Image 1 (tube, rainbow, N blue to C red):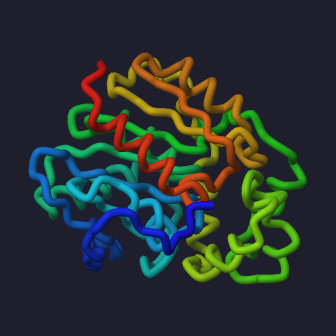
Image 2 (spheres, one colour):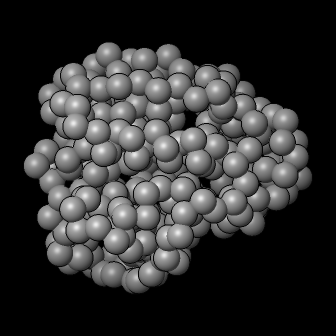
Amino acid sequence: MDSPDTVTTHRAEPRFERRTVDGQELRIAVWAGSSADKPPLLLFNGIGSRIELVAPFVEHLDPEREIIALDVPGTGESPATQFPYRLWMIARMVGRLLDQLKIERVDTLGVSWGGTLAQQFALQNPRRCRRLVLAATATGGLLVPGDLKVLAKMATPRRFKDPNFMRENMGALYGGLARTDPDLLADFARLSRSPSRRGYLYQQMALAGWVSAPLLPLLRQPTLVLAGSDDPLVPLVNARILARLIPHSTLTVLDDGHLFLFTKARESAESVDRFLDSSEH
C-alpha cells in the first residue's frame, strides 16, 4: 500500500475556507498550484467522506496543479441541507462556488458517489469542465451491483464511527488491499469522520432514480475511467459500461479494490496526471 504518510512531492498544505453558496455553508480546501497554465482539478469524494480522505491522493498529484475539494453538505464540516436535493442542485451550487473563486474552467474527478456528481457536473457544464476522471463509479440506477449483503452494510454511516464494524467488514466492503493490509484500517479511521445521518440520507436520496447512461454519449470531455479489479461495491463491469458509453474515454484498471485512490495513491495520481497532461483528443 502507498502509505498516506509517504509523500513524494512538495505540495503546500491546503487552505481551508468556509463559503456560503445559495444560502448553504460549505467547507472547502484549496491546494495551491505553482503553474497558471494547468486548469485546477476539482475533486468530488465518496458518500459520507470528508476532504481529508482525498489528501493522501492529492499529495501525489503534480504540485503545479491547483486542487479544489469540498465537504458535500452533511459530510465533514459542511452542515446538512435543510431539505433533500438532487445531483443537479449540487452541481449548480459547485458552479456558483467556482464563480466565487473566480475559476472559469476545471478538470473534474469524482470517486464512487462523487463520480455520479462528476458526471452530472460535466453534463451540466460542458464548457466549464475540460476533462473528466471517473473513479470506482457507475451510471447510477443502472449500476451492476456487487454482493447485496455487502451493499446493505453501506446503508448507514456505521463504518465511519464503529471500529469493530470496520475491523470485521473492511475487506468485504472495499476489496483489494483492504482484505490483507492491517494498517489500512488505522489510516482510514484517522482521516475519517462520521457524516450526519441526515446528510448521509440526503446523499443516498440524491441518487434515487438518477441514471446517466442515456446522456453519456453526449459527453464531449476526454474521460479517464479508473476502476479496481476487486471492487465489491462497484464491480469492474460498471467501468467497462462507462467506457463504452462515453465517446472519448480511456479505461485503466488497477489491481486493487474500491479504495484505490487511497490505498494506491501514488499509482492512481500518476495515471491521473498523465491523462490530464496528455494531448490526446
